[in-house]
Length: 143
Ligand SMILES: Nc1ncnc2c1ncn2[C@@H]1O[C@H](COP(=O)(O)OP(=O)(O)OP(=O)(O)O)[C@@H](O)[C@H]1O
Ligand SMILES: [Mg+2]
Figure 1 (cartoon, rainbow, N blue to C red):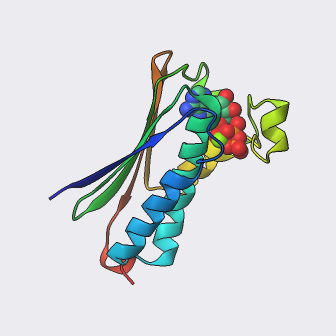
Figure 2 (figure 1 turned 90 degrees about the vertical axis):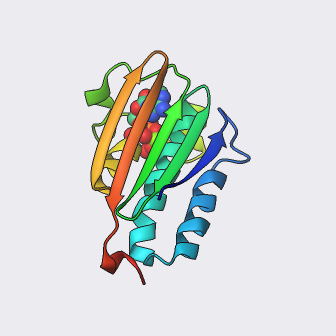
């Protein structure tokens, strides 16, 4: 059995930025996963959400849970990432000065996402970016 939830994320919407990842966190807590496991997923969800807000034209986060794994997918409507290798390297950011003043743009989002999941996949074109992350559910991921 699969359970899927979608969370719409809007471009430049700093007012609501973070809401999708807190909803995901609440949901994972209800299921009863350990805080350690939840933290990894929420770090990734937050980074993905902020990337949609800051760098994209809008998109969504999708979380799917079955008996064996959690899959988090970030999908957006473009403009895409020109150089994926560069985007995945620590410290690389195209964030504007205004965005940096809000505390973002360290160029650590994608590298952190990669570090905090079991499987990481990114695909990007001018039509949009898809980041897919997953985690295995084991006995010890329940508290
Ligand atoms: N969804 C996206 N759409 C378009 N470009 C993106 C997207 N996500 C990331 N990027 C590009 O990849 C770069 C690196 O992303 P990353 O999340 O690692 O750093 P950042 O968002 O710039 O800063 P930080 O995440 O540390 O606040 C971004 O600066 C941006 O150029
Ligand atoms: Mg980022």
